Structures are given as structure tokens and as C-alpha cells.
Length: 110
Image 1 (cartoon, rainbow, N blue to C red):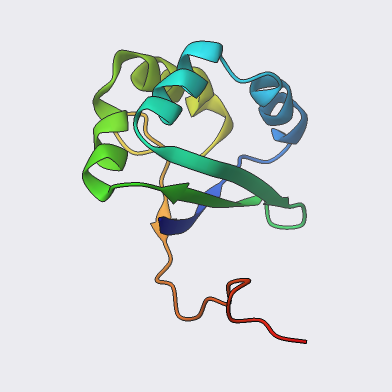
Image 2 (cartoon, rainbow, N blue to C red; image 1 turned 90 degrees about the horizontal axis):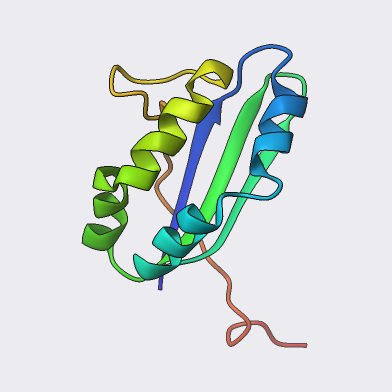
């Protein structure tokens, strides 16, 4: 499993609408994510800065990249664009993190 982490930027005063639009997330978008090998996808908000921290576990980097080419993802980007900083194609500006350390259950000992 590949772990992905990245940050995005929410616009000022968009927190409640962002939360509302994700609850529930469109079923067809959830299905697309699952079909492209995405697991355990979470997004966290840092309230003072409006920064969104996202974490996802994916099966394959190529399949992850293909999500953005789907019709449902492009509709989602357009739907969410007014709430956050975006690229010209309406995708969210996402700053990727490089994993530097990971501790899994198998490594932890009492």
C-alpha cells in the first residue's frame, strides 16, 4: 500500500460549506475512488489557516493519477472550486508531502 499525504487551501469562511458538500460524498465519486484503489482517505482542517491536510492509502500511483481524468472527478472539482484554491483545470492546488518515517503495528513492541 502506498501512503499519500498532501495539503490544500480552503477559502476563508468556506469551512461549513466544505463539510456540507462532503457529507455525504457523492456515491459515484466514492465508487470511482474505490475502483481506482483508494483506501482510508481522510481530510483534516487546520482552522486557523484554512489548510486541509489529506491522507490516503492507494494501491497504485498510476491508478491514482487516472482519477482526475474521470468525468465524476472533474464534476467534483468544478463543484468544489469556489471553496478552495484551484489550478486552471479546477483541480485543487495540492502540495505533496514526501514520507520520511512510518511506524506500523508489526514494528511496535511493548
